[in-house]
Image 1 (cartoon, rainbow, N blue to C red):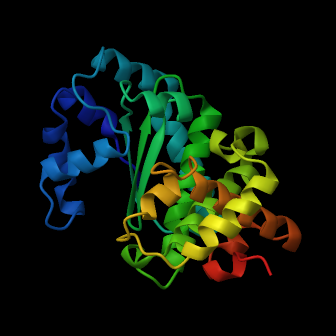
Image 2: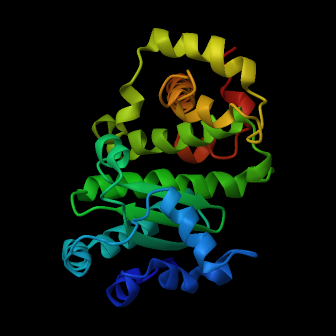
Length: 258
């Protein structure tokens, strides 16, 4: 497993992503190619028409995107003793303004047994490394915790995200962590934890305010859950002088400040 040669798929069918997603139906239970495409595009995959699609794919090939991700995947798998998973790389949506402004046109979607990366021609090698580090850390965390992702609480999810971005900090330095980690001061994060996140820590994803608490919106601060999760994990790692690998199988409750 590892990086799938999706560049070959894209050169043949980038104008018809639903047909492209027919190659993925065996990986999803009871999902059509159209279902899969709608799900991937909701998380950052391009929507047709892809401007200068063939030229873009060739630019990504020339930059060595698939080779960079494969090389980094092997390093991470060895470093964290992680599972084998297929990795699918597709162009991100250049029309998605939030994706472009907040994440420089890159995104990921992780499942326990597979992961997807959505990239742009503007992403540097360090950005690609950071993206894979974050997403593959999710794979490793999901393989360690004794709980199905559908049963995750808000606390489980913010720690999942915090562990992943702290792994980027540990491997690539603070200069390569996501922009959202800097949105709030330490004092503001403490208030968000005490007043917003902690009272809802056991909330399930079926709750109406789960996603707005995590991502922002509906009167909740932008990326609040992510930011608090990163702060909790960072503080734990610094205080305990521990590593990403050592934290992967810790229960989410271990990161709650005493």
